[in-house]
Image: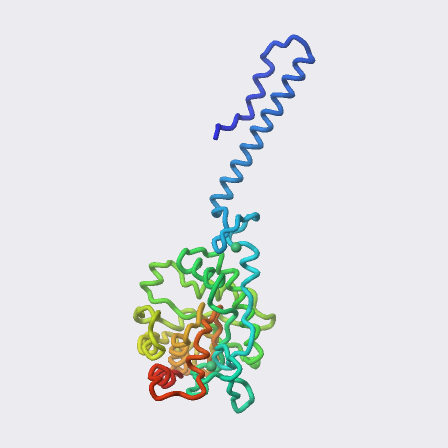
Length: 319
Ligand SMILES: [Zn+2]
Ligand SMILES: [Zn+2]
């Protein structure tokens, strides 16, 4: 690209000798147009440069060129596609239930086979959306590409989950505890994405609800191996002893709203709920932005066959 002509180029026009005033007018007009064009292209280039500095030109999720300046390089269509989960879900853990596997609890609510087998340590876990597609990509943008503005969008989703859970708080305001990262992971990432999302959500909490955030309550005492590819039993073993309550005084005889970004099989939040209750917490609710929905068939089988070792181990380990 040619360097843009500076604005002062026009000044030199006055020193040129012209044959007639008409010529002068014509030449000046031409120079003004040229200078304006140069100025416009200069400003446009600067704006484009700023635009490109703020974010690359395409939506990071679908690749569509972005038309609006935003701190989050995600297009409106992708954001609108991140819808809340639909369909029947377990009243306790939020797992998706499909028709033949639905089992009513004594109070008539549908619960999954896993929760029926072994009651979870938490009262109820609720999530905004299914952990797939754009929602999963958005969480990854925050966690792995450190795109912090994503926390605002995820926080809005979490705030909706808190609104859904709020009526069951029965006027008692729970202490809000984000699931912590291990210190080494926190150093490496520079922030706990769950805490960022929780802070964004609490700004949008339902009116009249006082929710105090206490990230200092829980500590992840040892780094946990990646849970990917582990059975629910192995996940539970992996998590055992991973969390410690550093401030039991803050949760003793209090209700707790535990927050995480993603609930996979529920082993992380179950372990946190377990140690919180052991430290004296009354009831623990769980709010997550996303939830994986893939176990409804595996774990809600109406009849377990003797050779289905994985399912039996998972059932025994849950709760
Ligand atoms: Zn997009
Ligand atoms: Zn369940």
